[in-house]
Structures are given as C-alpha cells and as structure tokens.
Image (cartoon, rainbow, N blue to C red; front, side):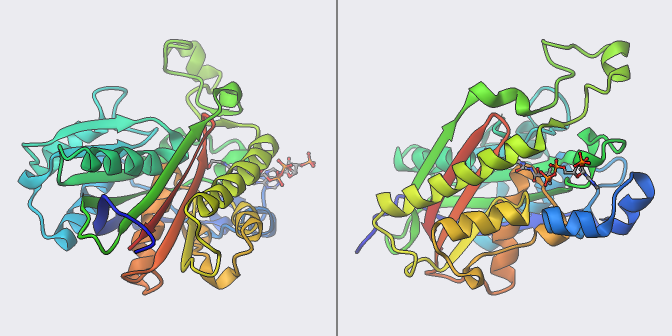
Length: 329
Ligand code: UT7
C-alpha cells in the first residue's frame, strides 16, 4: 500500500443557521454592489445566526450528526477539540459547553485558536493523539459565529463573513483508509494584518474600545490575500511532494473558502482541474474554522467526496496560520 494510516474519519456533519444574508441585503446596509462582491470574492450569500444562537449550539448540532454517522455515543468520546475564534465566552472553552450539551462525560475538551486553520490544526492534533495509542474516539469541530464580531459599517469586511459549524469523528484507522499526512505552520510576524484588537489583555473591554469599534474584525485585505495565495499554494504543493502524490491521483481539493480567487489560484498552483475543487464560498461566505468541515460534510452529502477518494484540505488564516491535510476518505 502506498500510504500508511493511523486515524480515519468515520463521521462528518455540519450545521448552518437558516437565516440568509444576500448581496442584495448588504447593498441596503453599506455602499457595495452584488457585482463587486461576486467579482472580487465569488460570494452571493452567507448564513447568519439569530440572536440567542450560540457557537456551541451550531457545533453541538454538527457534532451529533457526525456521531450518528460514526455510530458512537457521547460517552464514548475521549477528546473534544474545537477550532474557533468566536467562542460563546472568553473562557472557559466552547469545547466545554459542547461537552455539556452532548453529555460527553468522559471527554477532555479544549479550544484551539488558529483562526481559519483551527479545524486542520485540530485534525493534526487528533491524528497524533490517536497515533499515540492513548485515545480512540475524538471529535474535532470548526465552528464560528463571525457575524458577532463583524462590523456592518465596514464594507471592506462585512460582505465576507458568515456563521456555521462542521464536525468530524476520528478513530483508529482500519488500515485501508485514513489520514495520510498533516502539516501546520504559522507566521506570527504578520499577526496584526487580520485580528480583533479589543477584549484581550492589550485592549481590555472599556467604553473606549467599544467607541473605537475594536471588538470587530480588522483586516488588511490585499496583504492577507497575497499571503493566502502564497501560503495555500506552498502548503498544497509541498504536501503532494512529501507524500509522492500526483495531481492525477488526487480526487478532490477542499480549500478554505475565503475568496474564489484564492481558491482558483491554489488549484492552478498544483495544476488541478476545476472539476476536482469543491467550492461553496458562494453560499456560505467565509466561515473561518468552520469552512473546511462544512465543505467536507456537504461534499460528502452531494456525492463529491466518496469512500476511498483521496482528498487534500488546505487552509490559511489569521495568525498567520496555514495548514494542509491529505486523507483517503
Ligand atoms: O479567511 C482568512 C483569510 N482572509 C482572506 O483570505 C481574505 C483575503 N482578502 C481578500 O479576499 C480581498 O482582499 C478582499 C475581498 C477583502 C478585497 O478585495 P480586493 O480586490 O483586494 O479589494 P481592495 O481591498 O484592493 O479594494 C479595491 C477597491 C477599493 O476602492 P478604491 O480605494 O480602489 O477606490 C475599496 O474601497 O474596492 C473597494 N471596496 C469595495 N467596493 C464595494 C472594498 N470593499 C468593497 C465592497 N464593495 N464591499
């Protein structure tokens, strides 16, 4: 066999709010146009959680679907790992609230802050936990309510983001399929190009931080765009090289859904035809850590991700963080 596997994905699920925010809706809120948004980002609509819906609610819903497919009970879970930058509260972790929602009484639960790479960082940790032999059933989630930290007076960012969650169950591989290799890296030098300044030890919450709108996402779009194109292209091509995988052998690329132009550039970089790229940025916008697991679950539901398919996941996000995972589904 060409690859060796330690863990495999045995369940997938996703959950998005019902409420749809279209480009036409945004035209009424800020000085923008459907044409600009579609041409510059590929986005047409995104989902927004109603007041009272929490990140942990979407994550728990996605998790239940993934557990149903894997045929495991909440009590079987050893670890719950959640990638999010929009948890229910500053602390404790959203993973602990999810643990309680699910009644997963035997699990250890924690969040990781790696922005849009949170889910792939989580998969990497889970794969290594399973390889260690210590854990057998791990729930990895990417979940966000970016609408809660989006400034709907800033047209440069408010058209981009949406809410949602996706979840995967990882278990020891049966030897025929599973995770081939994981990669993750960061570049903290560029952290302030995409961040939320308010609410932490640097700018604790105060009237002033609220007046200055520091509790919203700030992004230097063009710089982030350039870094995303380079990092995602590098990560994808390096992963193929390291695993001696050809583009022909690859069945599907599921990239982080931040911008259609970044997705196209990543596919071009590894010379992958468009039919092998999964895209849903038009319907959900950028959901940060949730974007890849939502896309995985949706691709599976649509018959685009089938058992034994070889699939490459690639992410880029605030930090900067970037990551890639190759797996046989
Ligand atoms: O998920 C984590 C990673 N995030 C990303 O990867 C996002 C990366 N960045 C991007 O996707 C793109 O940079 C954006 C979509 C955010 C922006 O696209 P762009 O082609 O880089 O536009 P720009 O920022 O260079 O702005 C071009 C023009 C500006 O007008 P002027 O100064 O040329 O007159 C902006 O003010 O477009 C204007 N603009 C808008 N116009 C209409 C910016 N936002 C909008 C808008 N509607 N929503």
